[in-house]
Image 1 (cartoon, rainbow, N blue to C red):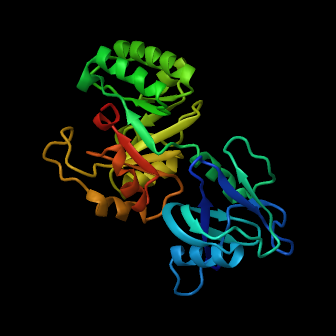
Image 2 (cartoon, rainbow, N blue to C red):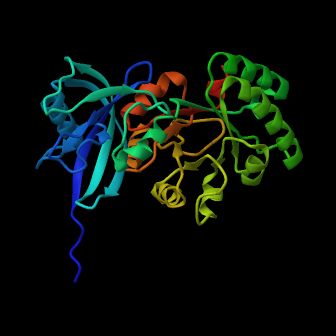
Length: 316
């Protein structure tokens, strides 16, 4: 009879500066994968929570005291020597100067412009999640009218809007395609990414940056849609999150958090409900949605979200 696989729980900290730079450290001699670069952290000891282990490890290894850390995602990875469950935290506050207490090197890095290698295999996919912005915007043509919304889109693009989900279910296929072409053309000069909601083939045809799937569309798939750089999905419960994981999404949007006009009579899950979903541990970032504003970003991150997804709140 095969013995069950022993999983080693590890707390990992992604130290992030306000400008988006993050810290990588080299693995010291004598450890597996010595010389590889990774996010700092270490194994949980008996009775420790992941956050307690993170604080202890960063103090022991680097001489810093963590003052602000939010849970982010959980990833299980099998190495030749062990299977590890990595509990990632985004660390945005610490006290003390970073020290090399175990002979390791440290380097501040920028995504898609790494200056160190090789990266520890389990940490490689995390780089993708770090490309995600704190705010996802959903289009609001039905709410504002097309010309009004396009004018607001231009203003938001000029002020730094990074990612947009084009979702207009009231439009027929032809009108949606025309709007998508217009939006992609306006977003490209600003380097903003555009995702089409449920229109997988059109996203491929127009060269959109990806697709965002409704929970119903995601449920109908057996795998990740091919030929797209990014795939996200809307979810409302553990079953839909499990399906999103099965098809290999890059992120998921969960809600609704508060009462919204788009869900009249439907009870919101609230932050407690979102926290329960997030704490189940998923290998991709989660966004909170539903009656939120950009100012809710800190509250969302405290509950394990990467950030917030906004519809009306994105265009005010």
